[in-house]
Image (cartoon, rainbow, N blue to C red):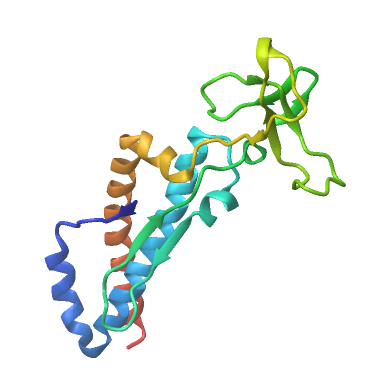
Length: 190
């Protein structure tokens, strides 16, 4: 999933950029790259308003393609696989695993779920799994276990089209602000 921004009223900025001469491409690159960073922070904050996740985990699933050289295209790419329940604050309780993924929904109890203890030789400690059930709901030792997974970061963003619209509007707003700031900075150096 890639986010792109179209800005109106850029002609006035282009006219002011002509004053810079050979320094104009550098100002444009700095403007685009600063806007990318602003966009990533905005998306991270908005996703955390919807879901219980840490900012570092969200930002780890975003890649910034910065403007370099004579290439003036920049984008934020959101990628990733479904995240483990341990990232959503899951905890072991007597009857299974209790987890709260969305902020606007209550905690859910996943029966037959368990947390791997430290010292396990086969499984990573701290991850959550669920035991498969045999006939009549009885546990059978030889049946496989399955890792408990929540939604991925792209799925969270894709479920909420309003979030993408807000991000696009915010990116356009920040682009004009950053362009004016970078232009003022470059002109103040003269």
